[in-house]
Image 1 (spheres, rainbow, N blue to C red):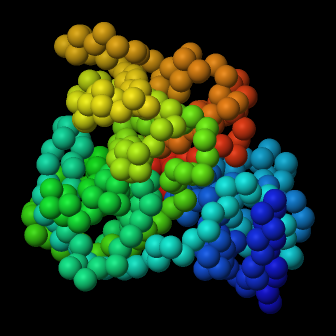
Image 2 (tube, one colour):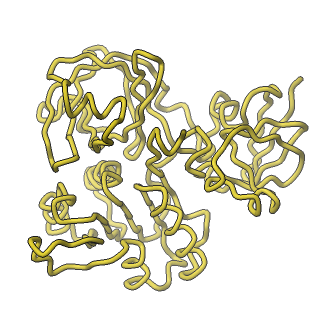
Length: 345
């Protein structure tokens, strides 16, 4: 049995089978509904069900609460239609310019940027057709079929730069993690990994003129680094401010890079924020929660766009408070919550 799906206000339509998820069918139809984890853990794909009925598969309560579901919100990554449906989503984008591909990739360098952060450089096959938008991610396909997701930390135009020679990833060690224990233990240069991408709808809307807040926690800095590189390459003039939240000074693992970009780019400011500054850090900068630093500096976000990436708790708090307290229209909050395998379990 098949049903029709209509997206408003764009008017995009597609037909799908009853046993498929709305998100999967939309992506197959070339319609980019917002999404992140695809596992019902992050809530990035949440949108409003205007008409019809859906049935939700397994998902986390923090991604879609009972109150939100009662108010008509749905998670497209785990919702299957029970009738023709109409969804409201203002973040629909056209897909197809960069097809999703599977390919082998070779580890070229591993560099410990912080005690628990590894910068990994991957060489792509010589005849590869891999393209992506700054902010998107890839998935590693492990030998047991499990997958692990990481955002590209370099802009697309740098892939063929000899200094990069592929893609750059920032990987945080999750002790006991199936993949990251290997990265921080036995992984060696020249190791072959299998990947699929590009994935995700987290990237700058370049047709907008709104000033941008780039909000990161931890390795959520990685896709924002790619976005800054891309905006620089495109000779951007839109004002942007990068807020990077970390626990200690050591966790700002590319602090000098961010300072250099802000010094060289008249449209970019950089505000680092530490939540647990150590006495040894001798930190003279901002402290506290990074999204609260944004609210202190920008109490009115009604004319801005926000690109938030990092821990799910930070992303969720930022979305709620920016909309409720600073007047940010919800459709201008773009996010990629970094959900770990433990988050998805």
